[in-house]
Image (tube, rainbow, N blue to C red; front, side, top):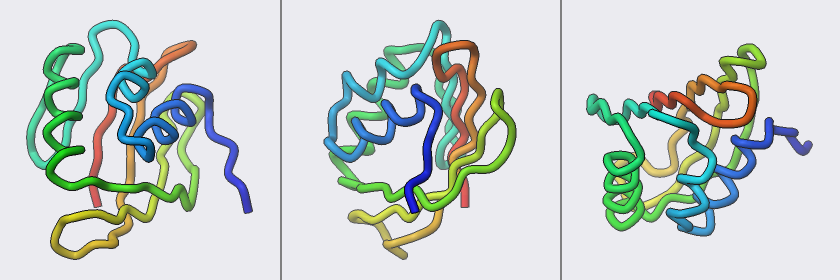
Length: 109
């Protein structure tokens, strides 16, 4: 079963699996926010640093397994594999979208 994601999410996850930092960041809009592992990040520079650090450290790949929530606040379930304890794990990506981009992302179990 193929899950059809909104365009910014498809862009983000495709780039994530390619380890393409610029591609991942291109899915985010103005003044974006990310919350991951208890850390809050704001703005493209902080989010780029986080992407570079976590990509280098964990080298994850993501297989989308579900889509729930609303059009403006989709929740993506995914099987995440990489260099971290408990891999692979199911994580939930809670997004907030505007008309064309990601404005907030919170990652959790």
